[in-house]
Length: 546
Image (cartoon, rainbow, N blue to C red; front, top):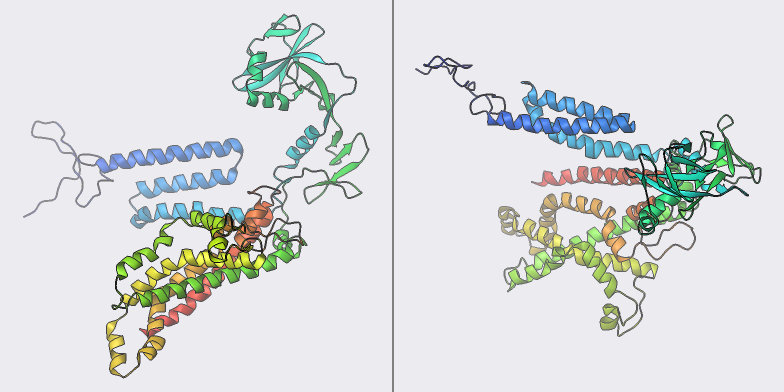
């Protein structure tokens, strides 16, 4: 008769406690003694997770990112509760997936929506206080008639400072600390040779380090605690002079006044300093603008016209790409599924070669082959007798080139899919049709496509969603060119919505408008989501055939 195992350590025959044993059915990850190495591994992993979580919490606290702090703290506490609690066994398996879903999906979507509700972009990427500081610095000028002083560059733990020799006295300061007398500094002629707590940067070191030179040029050392006294700056690293801003900041009135022209710039709700004549200072700050970005994409004169044309081309590109590549792949699959074709295996392998090449590399190769100059473009040279055909410069030819190149890239995928789907069709259904006297054509038109679509329809929907955002083929082949001539926006005839968003985001250069780009991203997400949901709903009816 079996006996129960001991639940805890029991004295050994020699009178000393022996190793505890696991309860029947208890996991290694919960046993502390004996063979419970799983518990040790769990402790190590949880210690690492807690260390990373606390490091993020501390960094968020230092930066003042309270949302990240709260989210990380909640996830860390939840992880400890899930994996040290005896309850909710399923959550031990679900928690990693839910955590990644929260971090990489929901957080990203929430952050994108948050950006879409702001004017975040070039000139509006900071707070109002930082914008005022930037404007004051940008408008600094050397004070006319101000005296220049012998200057020595100092360095301490990666921090740069200045030492000035004024009236026989050494003054030391850095970006955060105003100039103050340092009586213990030593001087040789006009040069400061030593300052307690600082390393003197010699001339040769300064000239040989471009990064250091830039830091010295950017450094502003306040003359005093009163910002109206200006700051010391240098242009060559040996002489310093007083600079003052031509703008006067009045925090009470929330205005900046140009002391040279007298123009007053008033802070506005849209995150800009604007004068009465409509002129605005180049640096603004980030503010919430509500749904303005969602409306601006349809109403802004620079984007409204191109937006609708690009949207129409995006739908056309996605539909034509999926339709042509699917039909091409299906036709090839039907042909090479016939047992009378010899060498089918070799030809199948050759047909899928384009699918094996990286898409971006193929697009770049086609870009070179479609060069209008027949001396460089092999397509014009070999197939059009050296004629100059502007494949990538004409709006319609560029679109045709994109469709054809994407067909070359995509049909092998559908060739593989349709070949597999054809070979998996139930023979009994086809045999029953033949017994009932159905012709080969009628069998093909009424039985094969519906059965084929049951397995391929979800892939067609996925391919449509993929090509709706097929950034690679567009950007590598044409970069959206040729450009529209009726707008100042950097957009072109072959841009689709995703490349339009890329251009507006400013990642490729130029003025960035992250708020508008985020709003358009959400619109694209909604369009693709609605179409995919509708298409999946329609494809369920195909399953009723079986």
